[in-house]
Amino acid sequence: MLLTRRQFAACMPALLGAPAFTFADSASPLFLSAASDSADTHWVIGFEENGDQVAEKFRHALPGRAHHIAVNTALGIYIVVARRPGKYLWIGDLATGNPLGQIEVPGDRHLYGHGIFETDGSRFYTTENAWQLVNGDSGRIVTWQVSRHGDTVTLDRGAEFPSYGVGPHELLLASSRDVLVVANGGIRTHPEQPREKLNLNSMQPSLVYIDARDGMLLEQHFLDADWHQASIRHMDINASGEIVMGLQYEGEPFDRVPLVALHRRGEAVRTLWAPEPQQGQMKQYVGSVRFDASGDFFAATCPRGNMITIWATASGEMITSLRSRDGCGICASPNGFLYTAGTGRISHYDPAADSITEFDTTATGKVFWDNHLSAWGVS
Image: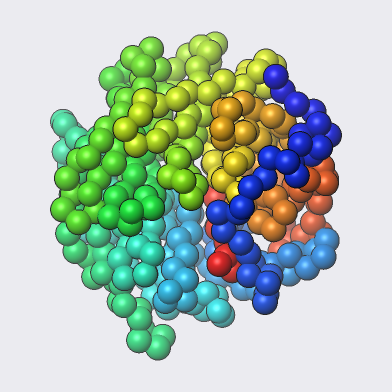
């Protein structure tokens, strides 16, 4: 049963347990996102909350449109990952935002927009496409060795191994630290046809667990055959090791398919359904998923449906929804979720108070926020 926002707010104090992480008290969290403007200039922007306003901390032009920004707290850097089929990794300093370097992947590869750091910051993993392989699994996971000396950051391309699928998109590091979780979206692409999807009839998305030390496959899970066109794209993990997945359906627009799923190692994938009319309003597309600080709730953004959905992890039920035109980027923030939109808006939802704060974004000007939002200042 879908709760009203007010009913959800009334339940929050009893439902929330010990947080999976907390936000540092010494300073406001720094939020980072890729964005573009009307002149088609692409940016990385860092900002903080300041009351009901956004305070921009830095802004730097990028060589092309970006997708996700990975944060390395141990070394105090961030890496901007190019949007598929881009090839660049752009490195910046977290404290100042200043650029520290840029590298590109080899000519026979392209990136899928996501990367993740090992906890101590010494390794960075990217999802890539070995696009010359037109048959079989073309997905690759690449390990980079990372070091920093002053303002010099080195990324050395190291070992790589298969993703055990096609079109690997977002990847996570499991709590064991030696296990990578990869969302194989199942969609074959080629840089000469940049946004074309070349195998929609035969796509086979999967969720895989891989030993980060030697690339061995530990587990692989597929959706039901009827849903083989539901591309597994985005994920998050909570402190208990539960994975939430957001799906993007590539089949007929009238098909009814699940768009959110949960998984624990050793178990079957648990697909979730929103009540109607919200299920239909999700428009077969989830753009980002993130747990809140407790891990007891998660958000799934639906930019095509102009909606943010909030779910209970334990029950797998959707409990409320928020209207947000082209809302997609989201992350946990103090007292709830911060989310961004392609319209340039930045908002915060506090479930305990059942309140939405719409920030004054004068400082950031008219920009169109990209799909993902990252945060620094989490302890």
